[in-house]
Length: 318
Ligand code: PEP
Ligand code: MG
View (spheres, helix red, strand yellow):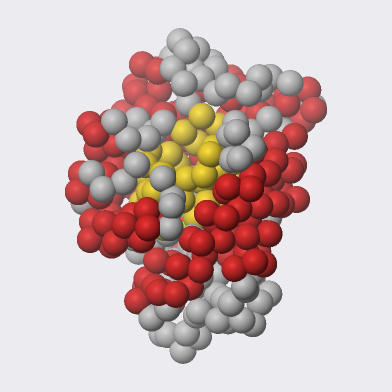
């Protein structure tokens, strides 16, 4: 059945009335990029570069990094690949960057914040990305994780431009960045919302604690408000705003995200066919209406139930 469904995706995500929504893949290395390209992903919306280096005791050389990045970029030559700079720390510690003695790693020196102590690691990485980008012919977009302020955004974009990155953006996964969306979006070419962390921080519920899964749920209306806020700022400024958290892989939630104004969805490649099929069954106005239902619900469980009840096509996905 999975095979049958793959044929439904013709490589161009859209709603029933033709509103375009890019359907992209989350990847972590060359092998997953090859698989994503074979499954018809329009591009890569999140390349988690730290996945190439989780087993390294030391910072990889620029040559090693460039080779690892090229393996991900090459299968998408001529297409968009969003490369995320290292997101070390918290749930993804890297021995050469992460201070294991922090009491609250999720609130600690992680993601872009590591540049405070180790600015050279970002410089090296951008150099390697630029090199791999030239060799691969991919349309390389670069973004930083865990950015909290417009000031950090400005710094990152300036650093990326100095290294020849033309399309620089940030992840919006800290509520402060979503609440400052206008100021953040003015400084970037694009943004990508990380709903995994955005939900964890909005709900003050650790994403690693199963007991809190009910709170740490991307259907939480408060988390969706932050998505809406960010997408609306992007629309005002004509900057694309994607989602690359697990939420994008939930077909019913993908409809809501599009209704909130998100312009692309990046997910595990095997989810793309189902998301494409459900999007194709609804108009953009319908997405907006369903997003309204989710926002008005008292909690995640009710939001999910309200929207799912309006999407009979979900029953056909198996
Ligand atoms: C996210 O936080 O939603 C995200 C995509 O990043 P990660 O899961 O790698 O933290
Ligand atoms: Mg994250």
